[in-house]
Structure formats: C-alpha cells, structure tokens
Length: 418
Image (cartoon, rainbow, N blue to C red; front, top):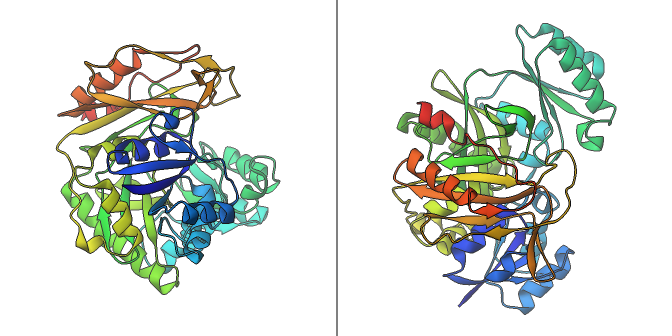
C-alpha cells in the first residue's frame, strides 16, 4: 500500500487524511488526538529529521497542510533528499509569506487587484489614507499572522490607528512592521483553489467561508467558522475569468520569477460587477474550506496530489461529485479571545447522518477525546443542494457535545438567500 505523510494537526489535515485513508497508509506530523484513529502520529519537528524519517520509512508522498512550514522551506528540504512532496518551494511560498511580495507580483503581471500602497513609513501611509476617496480602508500586515493580519477600518481615523499599531509592532510584532494599505472593494467574496504543478492546474469548486465569529457576520474575525462548496455565487463566466485573468498569468509569472508554483494556490477573490479581483493569495488549502472540498473529489485523491507534485497533472482527470458540502465549525468556549479548559467530547450515533466530522483542536487524555481549545472540529454535511447539506451539517452539530461548544447557526446563508 502507498504511504503518505501529512504535515499539520488541524481539521484541514484531518480531512485530507480521512479521504486518503482507503488509498494509502497515513502518517501525520504531528497530527492530533483523533488522527490516531486511522493513522500514525509522528512527533518530529525538525525538517531535516523528518525528511530522514520519511526516507527511512519509504514514504511515497508528503502533503503539507499549513502555511508556516511552507514559508520556512520544508518543500526544499524534502526535495533535496529526493522525496516527493506536494507544496510550493520557499521562494514560491512568498505569495503568502509576504503580502508586499504578493501585491507587487500582481501589479507586475497585470493581475486584477485593489489599488494599494506598501510601506513602512507612517507619513506615506497617512498620505495614502487621506487620499482615499471612500471608506472603509483595508490595512494588512506584511507577514504571517495566522489569518488575522487584516483590518478593515471603517474611518480614516481608525485606519491611521491600525497603521500605528502595526508599524510600532504592538499588533502583530515583526509581521506588521511593513504594511499594505488598499482601497476597499465592494462586492462579494469567493475562495477558489487551484491544484498546480508549475505549468498546469485543476480548478476545484468555488467555496465561501464565514470569518466572523457570530451570526450575521458580526463579531471579531476568526480563522473561519464554517464554509460551503460549491457556491452558486460562482458562475461559469467567473470561473473562466479566474482561469484566464488570474491563474494562468500567475503560473506564467512565477515561472518568470524562477519560482514555479506547485501545490495549492488559494485565491481570495472579491467579485465586483462580475469581475474577479485578487484580495490575497495563500499557498495551501483554506481551513475550513478543505474539509468540504476533499469530500467533493470523485476520483483518486492520491493521484491528484502525486501528479501535481511530479508535474503530471495533464495525465489525470479530476472528477467532482454532483453534490454540495457544508461545514460548521464548533469552537471552544473562549475562542477566539483566550484558551479554554479541556472538555470531553461525546458524539451521539451518526449512522443516519450524511456527512462526517473533521477534528482539529483535540487531544487524547486518559483515553478520552478532549476539546483543547480553538476550533475544535468541523461538522460537514452532504446533500444534493445547499439546504439539504446544511440541514445534515446541523444535524451532526446537534449530536456533538462538549462544554462551551460555540458555533454559528447561519452558515451558507448567502447561498440560501440567493
């Protein structure tokens, strides 16, 4: 049987392994308390040590989940050892690792994005803010901030305060000492994911996630409280524009930069008057979008990842199921403000539910599966349409119990209102 190593410990990584487990023997570094139900968890943090372990244990394919190891160059380390690994090189990962790099890349290759300035100079930042014709104004930290380095300022005064907080290092430390300030695009957001091998790509169904903590898109930004795919908001025309105006020029541009892009290109889009604009690039699957997308693949998942990692995407046909998946995140009591006390997770019988649970912030303590903080798990429901899939997801939510369970009750509302 093929042997696959998955780097990471969240719901995204759980879902990749969960849907690969019938095709391969799965190993995780480090995994979580639930991944050990169907896989082997490995506790090796050093990239060189991990590559050595992968070689000694005949790992056929390594898949990297989170952005941090990608930006720190895990792919380069594994490739130096002759190992097959799915993900971008350290240089290509700068598309997420540095928002300044990303915005300058978009400008250089004429890829549609919001008007912006990048600076570490407060006066320059203030001048751009004063010249903005309307609010809100978007301020982004340059470096990685675990998905939280973006502030949408409702007034010019708030925008200046955000700039002060970032440039001083108070808000995001070193990651915020260079900022992007950009005009606010008024439209609706979509997430699209292209599996890339440097030259070719496969575009997966568009997803929509829900960043705010509370119903009605209120409260603070989080890592994501739920998602659904495919979304009816993405028309065939938009898919085509994304391919021709965004993905193809990006792959060509990265080749010219001598950093061919291999892995997942996660495109955060704003659709304004039926035209797609790039808000940001990430270089890995979104979480919780991945938990839905993995369920929609109707062909070999192993072949999709392996062929992308070996520049052979043109040799396979990735099939998509004719269904919808909706995921609802169940978070811990104090999320996203502070850590929470561990709480035992109990799950009622799910045999009549159409879906699954992707576990994230969990550990095994004395043989019991415990919620240990953050986003604990994602309840994913399947259906022929958004409503049916959402009903299944919430049926699963109702059968999951742990102290302080927190979740939104309106996931996929945009699609149901359409």
